[in-house]
Image 1 (cartoon, rainbow, N blue to C red):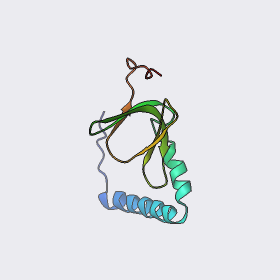
Image 2: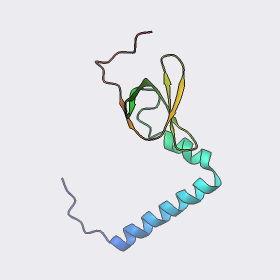
Image 3: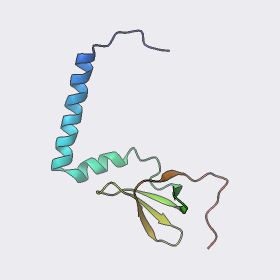
Length: 100
């Protein structure tokens, strides 16, 4: 059901601006703390995933965001890949782990 209430956009925007300003200040002072908080939203953390960029496919386990904003993936050989961009998605259940 949709809420049928009017929203005061000035109040909403002031709250959003305050939250964004506080987060940017925290990021400047303590980037590791912000990164740690952000990891709780990482759906792919420690999950099987696929990453595609161009013709390159990485099949591995998601290991989270680096302080530089890249994403870490560990493949079945234990190689750590650090990617930026591309298509990151859960591995379909019909796709098993790669053969050794």
